[in-house]
Length: 114
Length: 112
Image 1 (cartoon, each protein chain N blue to C red):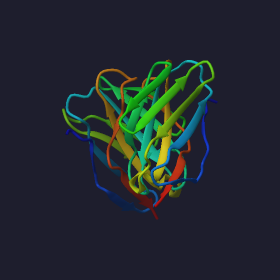
Image 2 (image 1 turned 120 degrees about the vertical axis):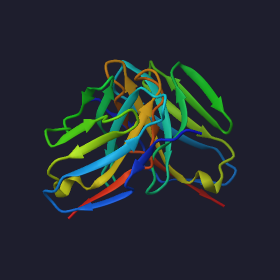
Image 3 (image 1 turned 180 degrees about the vertical axis):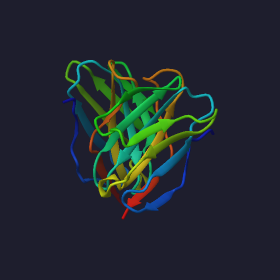
Image 4 (image 1 turned 120 degrees about the horizontal axis):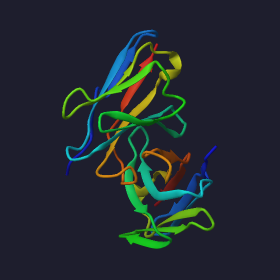
């Protein structure tokens, strides 16, 4: 069964450093998403991406964040200058045809900012 | 502010019994509704989705949707210890490009 994959599974970085989190969505899916979950808190939407453009972003997704689909398979989230409060699990998700279709989540990347 | 509310639990359920989980949402324009299961430290895993009012059954799981009351529920029949997890209700509005609004989740503990 096709799955969303994410790398790395755990990333440790120093405050102020840039990190890139990578995702490979399910191959025939058209919509891609990033969510985050701070320990003990809700899963929060960051951004949706369709047709090589950001479709929607949350207030969390400020100028330090960016997304890119650099090739036909990868979908990346870049955090330019990490802060302590960026420590969280970051989940990539994808859906097949429309934005109301079921979203399938990857295993996540645990980001720890020291 | 659009909200999705769930009881945090823990909901303690004897093995073999029915677990009943509830979720309310504030956005009347919400179109699609999802239940995800999340084990500790893992990602959300889809259990069920429902788009129309009424009941939808899939194996031991039944989702119920009442748009007039802005209420969606999940029943787990014949609960097993492996069902012990946090169950997340997620809602997708009609004015959003796929943005899922999640509840905080209900922790279910199935006791042998």
